[in-house]
Amino acid sequence: MASERTTKALAPSLLVVAGGTLIDGSGRPPLRDALVTIKGKRIESVAAQQAGSVPKGAQMVDARGKTILPGLFDMHLHYKDFFPEMLLHWGVTAVRDMGNDAPVWMIAQREFINRELIYGPRLFTVGISLESRATGHHRCVMTPEEGVEAARWLFNKLEVDGVKVYRRIYPEVYQAIARETLAHGKWLAGHLGNVERVNGRRLGLTAVEAAEIGIHSLEHGFGIPESAVDQPEEIREMDGVRRDIVCWNAAKPERLKKVIEVLVEKKIYVCPTILNRWEEVFPQRAKYGPEDEEILSDPNLSYVPTLYREGFKRLWSSDSEIAHSRVTNPEGIRLKRQALDRYQQFLRDFVSAGGLVIPGTGAGNTTPGIALHREMELMADAGLTPMQVIQAATLRSAEFLGVSQELGSVEPGKLADLVVVDGDPLRDISSSRNVSTVIKDGRVLDIGFHADYRNPLPRPFQIGDHEDELREAFDKLDSFRSLFLTRPGGANF
Image (spheres, rainbow, N blue to C red):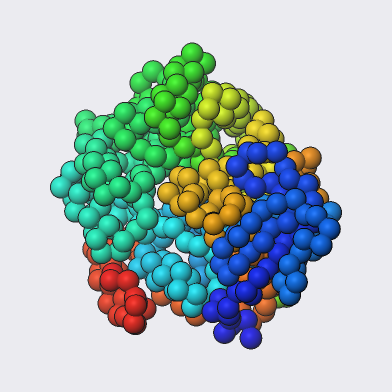
């Protein structure tokens, strides 16, 4: 049964993927009629196939007429316990969880997947975000000392992969968190913007301010337009649109060029999440809504909770309660569409200047798995080439996470995470969604949906909105560690 499925089954001694066109993630030209040989969990060789070159006795994946890609990365989502089948079904073999209201549960998921006790993608997580208030998946830090304490808790107790700061953060608190994060050799991500003054005190940072202090990725592109306007703390919502939309419309082109120079020089990644923040104004919404209706009507996805099932479908309706801007008036729509044009132009200029982009979907608010392919389509629509988009979703993402020696490209010696798709994504990036085979750790996965699927470690509960409830929840979650993680060979959390 799917509910009992793990990944403990041994990889075949020898597996070959033969006959397809290989796009290896490195940016090199495609290799036609490729033969990828996998021994155990790792790629043994990559070459052009020749007559009789398939080793005898090897398990074979026939990729003739198809394209072979590295396993794909979704670099911004909020992981839920029903995600694994949906992510792997669409070839997403690694994800970056960017804030979770059950952080210890997330660490447990990561460790059990790593030990092949749970079926799922590779997980990298921030645990919980840090902000100068406490709501949902954020922990409140009001002083530099609290920022350092929270960062050390994340590093030493949870052993997170990186840290995320949220927009309403005091600059001096951010600086303390950044110093601590860099000292631990971890990556730091920022959901920035909404710069303001509260009781005479500055709250929030622009992208350039964060870059000067130290940051590795900018989420949603937030903080970028605020860097290109005068007095961003004076910007207010207009015609029902967010302040960052107002900033994109007010941003000065010459200032945006300077922003690009800073971000490129400091090698800061941008995670655009076009799918999850601009849903009212890109034309593909007319396609994505009916697609979600069809996907989520599959009886084998009946385990998707009703709250999320209906939320995913409502995202594409103009009156959605969970849409991130809820713009319905004509002037607001016009302003947002104009802002998206400017955001897309920024992304084109940024990548042309050598800037680094990684794809993220915000899944948790949108249907996981297929969401990554939609984001890749939207990145191409913004002006990136299909090869740039594929690199962003593979090797660039692995480089950001510090795992490019093991993942992100199809090369000898690396872990064998591969996806085979029908069609040619270099001709039409939407072909990336036509997944026929997924290989993870050298094993061909069952990528079907199963109505009886249940995550063996269900999500325990959600954190409340107030600091006292948050700390109480941490204590409760911490008490679950012995249930989740105390077994031979387990990591010390």
